[in-house]
Image 1 (spheres, rainbow, N blue to C red):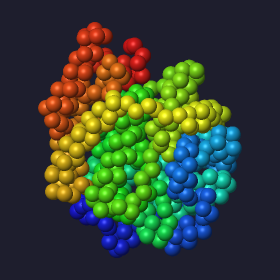
Image 2 (image 1 turned 90 degrees about the vertical axis):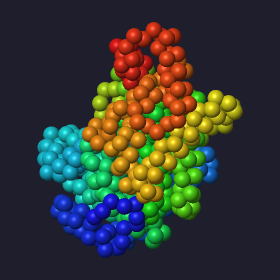
Image 3 (image 1 turned 90 degrees about the horizontal axis):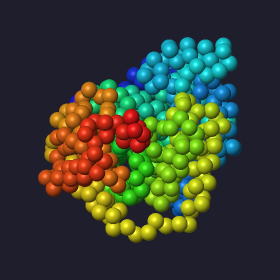
Image 4 (image 1 turned 180 degrees about the horizontal axis):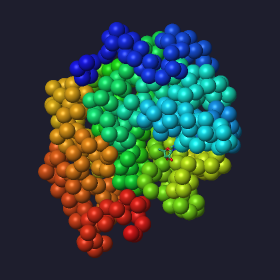
Length: 476
Ligand code: 5AD
């Protein structure tokens, strides 16, 4: 099939679904009618979009953890704890790495080993191995909506099974995954996600909203370039909208730089809305979330709390609808349920304390927002040109030519020339803009900001400065 940004016809969709379900025996029991029937019967409190609508109406920010262990009993225990003790508004279904990599036999062995040893030997929940009966047991055992977080270029089977089991949100999409987490060619990732997005679109057409959360370029998030993050999300959002997705949650990954993050949050929302409208998807609904700092975490718990707390403060001022919470054991490994719940409570407490407080109007935020807007337009214009108006084709060509280039990605298709560092105020700037199609003025502006810092802090090696930033400001 040729790559195009065009809604799939019914025949292509159904034939692809057949192929997807044949990937593992647990897929066999799934049919479109069964997904529809189960999704229709869900109580409203299990539908994520209802919670987002409520959050938007009241201004109350939701908190959302990540979590996954091997067994259903273990997972029910963990999610119940995060719900009751942590106050999680939406609950995660984080699949293990084997499931994400389509190594279902290894996931099965890991599950068997976990049962034998009485502790989780997988770093997540093997969605495909448990299949619909197991996943439904989990969804029905908790009170909150469940969100599947299969962040990979080939997530079709796990997400189909999750949707058949009453999951009403999914994280991630093609461009984000290909850039951040995978080595899969961009063309393959886009086609793969078009199936999943068409499945969501098919449910949307039947009055069943599924929220799709978009995660921009999280791999680079210690020094996350705000304009590139917005571009990646806009591309993923437009690709999904074409397949019929209607409920979008766009995420800004916080750099813990107050002014620039506030500008980034604002532009993420405003520009996503603008492009959706311009492309004719006016009935699309846009929610917003923030991700706690995603760089290296201190191993010491007190320091780790400082990192997530600052992120929570910025997200509160940014008035997002949800915060993706990092545990304070991020620097140590997969968190205990107690530490995960404690991180949720700290986040809840911080956003509640700030609920009635406004960040004062700031010309600096305006300035940064204008810069992000200009950069996004310059890059998006070229992506659209390259694809002759087709963003799927434009995206692939843009990546291969470095018109769109994201630092620190594992994907060999990415040109990998762009590098970022922070300036004296902690704002993320281009150390090297690579082939990004930015105006001379913008490139010069970044260059001056970087020079200013090098001179003031007396760096004689730019890469050491970069490594220092990635480590969250810890001298090597
Ligand atoms: N339990 C808790 N957190 C997890 N993450 C990945 N797998 C798990 C799990 N099983 C978290 C990582 C990182 C984010 C992308 O997801 O620690 O913060």
